[in-house]
Amino acid sequence: MADDQEDDPPGGGFAEARGGPTVLRILVGAQLRRLREASGITRETAAYTIRGSEAKMSRIESGRVGFKPRDVADLLSMYGLAEGSARDLLLNLAEQANEPGWWHHYNDTMPDWFSTYVGLEQAATIIRTYEAQYVPGLLQTEAYANAVVNMGETVRPGEVGKRVELRMHRQQLLHMPEPPDYWAVIDEAVLLRKLGGRQVMREQLDHILEAGRRQHVTVQVVPFDRSDVAAVGGPFTLLRFAEPDLPDIVYLEQLNSALYLNRDVEVKSYLQIMNRLAAGALTPQRSTELITSARDAL
Image (cartoon, rainbow, N blue to C red; front, side):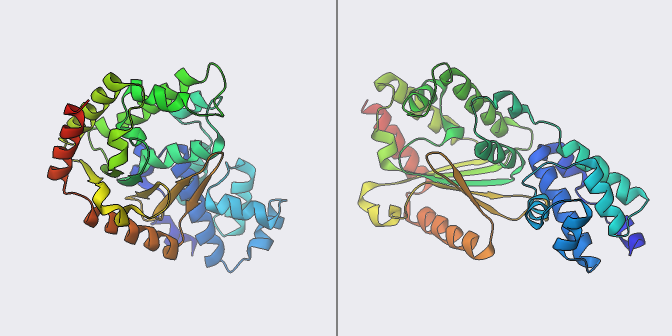
């Protein structure tokens, strides 16, 4: 069994190039789970080997926590990988997964639950988002983002500038040599809510129009006369990855927390909603016309 696994190293170049520590944790955790299941070992037995609980093993295998080198080494030995290149690679990836991503610099103003999202966003190859109140974060101007962040009741004094800086840094994702396909569906109300004043909003709408000209960015608007299409609840984001070990993820942000859904039935449900929104929204060309009209009216 160990010899077969030597030919199938986990992770690959994609994780190292784009994924960052969040994705590496998921990849290593998934590989550890596969090795455990292939060895016929229960999660409870594996947990006992690393002096932990079954809940700890669940967090390790789902990539929700970092790795202790000793734990990974003990698990690999238990699963039959006592030596060889596959073991060395997994240990190396586990070590890389403990290194902070660029967003670690913002940890003092960013909750842990959002840090996970930033890491996943950086690795996604397709990002589809629906927003009913604000311009999506990846399309916001700095002035607009400043107005949005200032509205937050939980923002402490002195945090606004750093949160806006984080949002601007995230947007570099859309300017990479191989950027993800980004598809945003927004409600018409987003265009008319004058956050930051008329000038800020005018510049924001110009920014959306400019972004929509890029080949990998699609923006659609759900007009008021199709309100039945938009009646889907709150905003959400669908993330898809090139790495087969990473399932599609639905991100639902709440006031002080977030939900990450990856069960097939949950993802399929939100995918259907997103497809219905896109089908019911204006085409990209007609959306551009509506955004232009809203900008000219300011």
